[in-house]
Length: 159
Image (tube, helix red, strand yellow):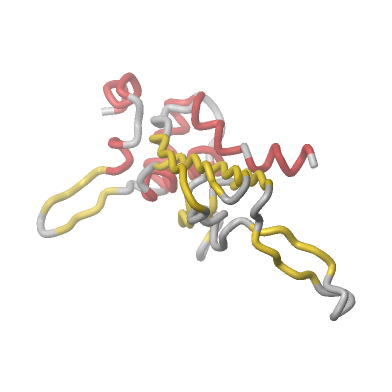
């Protein structure tokens, strides 16, 4: 249980990294926010089909800690963001959800920084930039999401 919680909160390492902290978004109301793909639910043994589980929508009480969702595509340095980390609390049919949102391209830069680099932060940033420059072009306008995701003090030192 403790190792599962450690895994689910691993994304909090972004606090001590050169990257900006995600924006916090709140939701309060009827149960509508997925965790991550389905609405909150509890899993019970299915007595009709032994060996199977039955999903029952959570209504009374349910706490979900959802980790940062990502996958690697073709190589071990090719990360893709899937969903933002979030906390969800269901009490008596109402839900409080807290989502930690960053642009997916910034999450991908942070994942490469965290999982594919070692050493002092500035060298890690340089290696991260080399692995994935994260510069996108649309309608002739270039956007550098790598630099956009850095904290101000690192942005100024990195240029």
